[in-house]
Image (cartoon, rainbow, N blue to C red; front, side):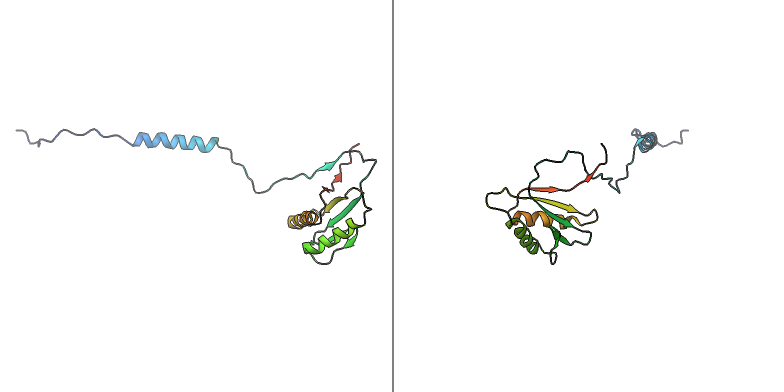
Length: 144
């Protein structure tokens, strides 16, 4: 006597356990071999000037920006922090030029703790005053 019921043909199944094992091994391998970098802090080295001093120095307008955001133009304090006041001071400093003389160079001396917006304000004021030659002051490297 055959007590077993007749069943239909069994469908083949894909066994997922070895597939999952292989994926876990690959995942562990990738985690071990991956290099992680930490970008929380940027290390910036400010430029240093090593060039010899020019023999013929052009006329300069020195603009200083301190850590509090205060401006001075040729050692004269600019009242307030607005761009308009800075434009007036730059025009006064540039207006002292003799007719036919080359346009002066604006030298920006910014404190390392000054906000970048304050330096951008100086650049904007120089553009509005018609001063096209602008440079930034740098520390001497001390090498010779």
